[in-house]
Length: 444
Image (tube, rainbow, N blue to C red; front, side, top):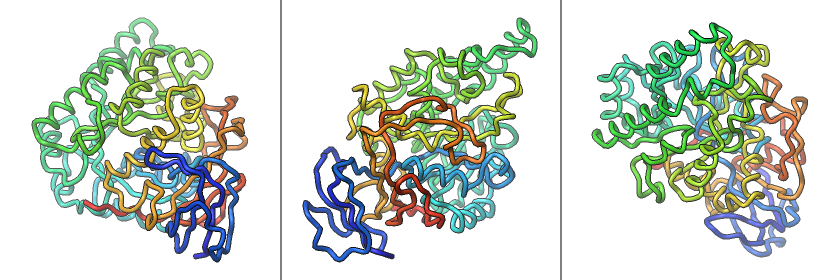
């Protein structure tokens, strides 16, 4: 691979911000120092004082391949991810067919090895009927086991209490959960259908997929994990109330951790009036108080990582009436710049963003030699201009679905470059045509 020098960068890493150079050889960081201009270099990128961060490791995406590729696939959505500063992702099992067998898991790895622009791993889906498969999973082969404790269909919805407990007991890797109580959701839906029929307003989405539905399911997951000694990671918290179930501290100090997603930090219930079903997601975007509580918990360390839950649907699908409109948002391309708005507003520091998007996910999932700016580590980097705005519109997105809930927004930062395993996957607003993502390795 060609050598590369990133010169005059403000490196933000492990709580420090230093102006220095980064030299890359064979895909890895060979040197970090004040002046590396004497190094023999095939390519120089002048950072001109811009911030150089470890690339975002997104612990939750839905790239829709196989079976749902009219919405997106590994190639299209990973291109959008690297355009947004995401260098690695962990993809979910609710494809068609669902990723509940080792053969299906390996098929995803085969596709990604040929087509992914970012580094990758995949979850095995837990189900009511695949406990033996979960038990046999090689801990080095996948990022985790995903359990839908709500908001899924078929055998991916683990609604058998015995099967759920057995997965918690026997999973050889971290168990990542989607926590919403289906009984509560169904009762709420029936109640509002009595009033509105099938024409339920989108503004009632957070009342249907309510705080109680989230809290009840998350509390069950936490109780099960404590009783079964499970390494548990609860995905996409959406309420301030759920925060009482978690503790402050670093991921090394915990066996139960939590994620928040960028849309729950950016949008609030007041946005349903303008965005409608375009921001329909599960769990629902809730109140401004919830949003502010989640941000404070992210800053304190009670919430450990930030993900996207990137989940594209076609615009025609999303524009259907509430009950028929599918839940999920395409988010990867603007996730990092939307999070950097919290830095501009004073709610987070740039070092905290790096900790929650890169360092903590790497430690939590035990990712090998990624997530940091360290000599010897893979060069997964994102160059950010904190003072050059990004104006978002649907015409500039790279998703197959060709729309974004951020359309019309102006972010105060811009992604200048994304380096994936030493390869400039995105530079100067242009995507490199060659997919160079690598399979993530683990140190478990």
